[in-house]
Image (cartoon, rainbow over the protein chains, first blue to last red):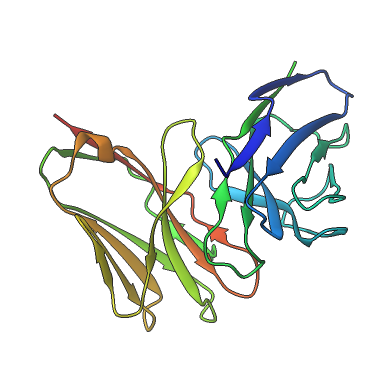
Length: 113
Length: 108
């Protein structure tokens, strides 16, 4: 089955620690995205990538980093510089940047201890 | 003014009722419009695209008013399974912009 997987489903981070969230897709999509969702809030774009080895900052990139070494993978690192990392993180992909539909993974809930 | 604005609700309606949500957007250059559905603690999923001429998918009807910059979603004959948060989504020259969503609870 084609789709997007995110792991882990739940992640706990100690203060001052970097953590990496995994996102993998086998849809052969060029574009991938990372969003953050806080309770009662809409999705906010962190980073997106239109093609391998290329990515752009979204609206709230500070304290996050990404890489796109492979078409199917777009990991997100939440660094210690992100002061309020507790949130629901969603990865998405689309065939190309301007593709109408984005397909989402099941999300990772990050909690700071 | 926020890019995409929605009434957060909640809308509490009985089964069988008709309910309508509206959404306004600020960027007049926006090109594409969508409604996504998000169940509690789950990922958003595309419900339907919104076309200028309006479009219908079963019990769901979406309409776009470019002059007034608003989008609507009408749900007829509400089911318990329609309970979810409905996200209004707009695309201009950047990746999708999501509204905060409108929460719907359909009550037996």
